[in-house]
Length: 429
Image (cartoon, rainbow, N blue to C red; front, side):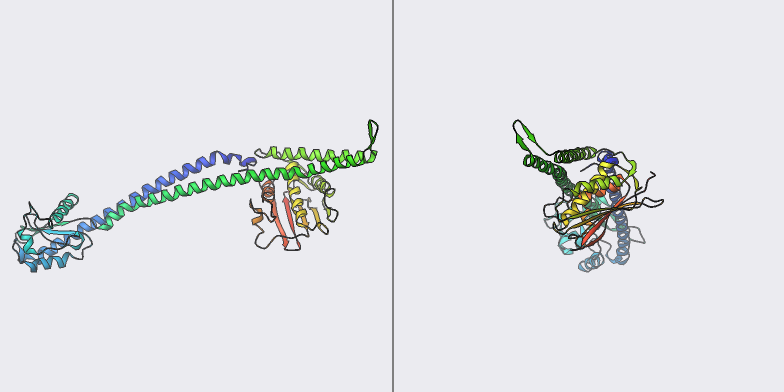
């Protein structure tokens, strides 16, 4: 990117600070997410434990008639399944010898009849019962089994084994998945931004090369023209050539102006990346000098006028950069008007106490299309087919960031012209 004046420090320290800020924020956010979801999972486990205890007590109180292993056969199993079937977490009921009697649907093992379960050897279970016993072991590692006691004697009737609901596991994984997805999006976003930045830098450098050629094109073509005039008007006479004194003086004067302009172009580009020096001075000589330079180099059908309504229009200026702004506005106006009937009017106003200094450039050209009033100040946006869209953005940056003023499109009518206005704070003369 182009570094202008006091903003060059933004190329070093702020990006480092921004990266540290984003990194610290991401770490804090990740820790907060982990803590929050872990806390939610703990709360779900606590509620599961409470609910399991209540279920155990309910079953103990409602099934006292089945206090031993033989119990009441299929009817008891049906009662247990009816109680635990809809619980939102896995539950397995076993007798005091860890023999499974029934289990909930969340165990993901097909139910077995009580008669078959009573025939099973817990130490050498069948292939159908082994998965249930493995789940009992896993449940007991995370949650202590709840004994179902006979209220009167306090004897243990059965044990209720339970596990965490699927929601608790999802809550524990949610922050990690969220962080992973966010990290992937962040990496992709950073790669895209890096690619976009490189493309923008390439565009800017190409645009600056184009702008350099554009800036130097006018004086170079003018110098070529004056050289052609010299070749056409000089008359050889022996070892010497004869040239009218008046023409000679004019050619020298104009070529000096062209070389001076080339020096100013070099000075302007040398100030990019450094803070310009501003001095209180009148804007009139800069504006009039730029207008006079262009007046001698425009097509015959184009009229260029300059009206000054404030001889003492003083502002804090950098002459080279402010002249660059006026040149850009005049070039855009010249490109917009018809080469046979175009009119470009420059007006300088203000300068009295309490008033700002304004420089307006008005033309009767193509105007700016509706909806493009602000977009034309963005880099890369141009209304010309071969334009690079750097003149107006650079001019606005020079006016606003260097001189504390404003550059606005104050009027535009497609097909009838446009008016740009530079507004600068008045400075004491």
